[in-house]
Amino acid sequence: MSEDLRAELEKYLQSLNIQTTCVEHPPVFTVEEMMPHLQDVSGAVTKNLFLKDKKKKGLWLVSARHDRQVNLSDLAKKLGVGSGNLRFADEATMLEKLKVGQGCATALALLFDRDQSVKFVLDRDLVEGGHEMVCFHPMTNAATMGLRPDDLLRFLKETGHEPVLESFTSD
Image (spheres, rainbow, N blue to C red):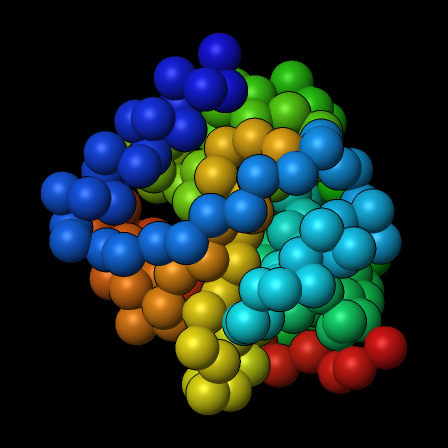
């Protein structure tokens, strides 16, 4: 299934004339597992968290640099959902909304959030930090795709996901 979704994503990116680079690797479930496979990749590697707001039932996808600390309580306050109200969403919700499962959360899956019900939080450093590329899973955790920060912003705009830019501190 993920191969079809990946092909659909790649076709969509091509339709926007977005150039990407891709590194295939064994399936990985953590940033730590992934890093050894990305030694030759220039650019910022991301970690992605799929969250839900306990009170308002809102869904959030957070993409941050892999070496940044994401404090859910602080983030909840910044987003105005109230401290302690952000939790990891379950896999069934992620599959339904983004068509990806555990270990595969990615900003690129916002292509499949057709009703724009997932709000997107982006680490400001990824688009303003001077990175040549920003890297995400392309609908599968057996590959990592890099695209230029400007192209990422264009992709988000085209899919109707205006990012909320936040700053995260280093680990």
